[in-house]
Image (cartoon, rainbow, N blue to C red; front, side, top):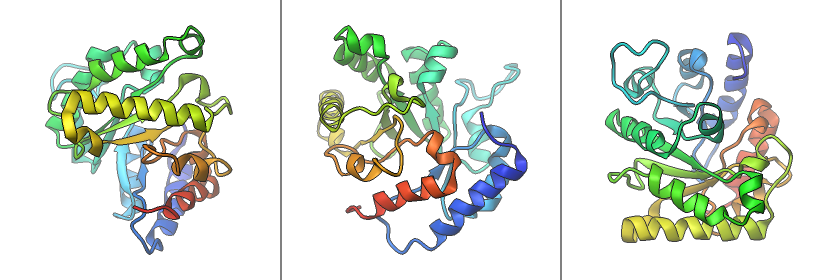
Amino acid sequence: MNGFKGEGETLAAAIADDAGALDNNACEILICPPVTLLSRVRETIAGRTMLGAQDCAIEQSGAFTGDISAEMLADVGCSHVIVGHSERRINHQDHDKIVRAKAEAAHRARLTAIICIGETEAEREAGVLREVLARQLTGSLPPEATPENTVIAYEPVWAIGTGKVASEEDILAVHAFIREGLLALKGPTGEGFRILYGGSVKPDNAAEILALDNVDGALVGGASLNADDFWAIIEACTGLEA
């Protein structure tokens, strides 16, 4: 929940201008601004980056005051929507069943669902990290999910906005565990799902994180509010194989 009209347009324009000069396809760039900025950001980026939203409702239409449907997001030009972000899970009680229903709503509207999973610091210290991730992945992933319509984002809750970052060894282990879970749930197609890492990704650690096995991109938080920092992360990605 950051950004008003002017600063949102300025930030999107700075990112889009650099993206327009990108001469390879080593990465895809997605911007997910607050819903109030979606229309203006869509005009600003003009196809140079993708546009996504931060959440969606389960229902398609009706008497749901304050909610925004996946179809409405598609109508304004979104191609993606984030569901199950830890802040939604914690602050709005979006449990696994709700996250799955929101992902299904995204698919209904032909949007790519970015399903977030991740453990709290207390859960990590209690040694139940794998149990938590397995429950969230199994409970949040719709039966019809495919690598084409679904992305998984691992975000250790204790690392979001704190400056703390999981060690490379931890990221490797957790992303390998998620990959194993996807293979168990989806068979061979589980290999094709993108798994993003999100947790205090910054210019000075992005290259190392993005180079790890089973890390297929980054879900960037605070660093995305600064065009130079966000672009430095993108540059770290473009140096890798697509």
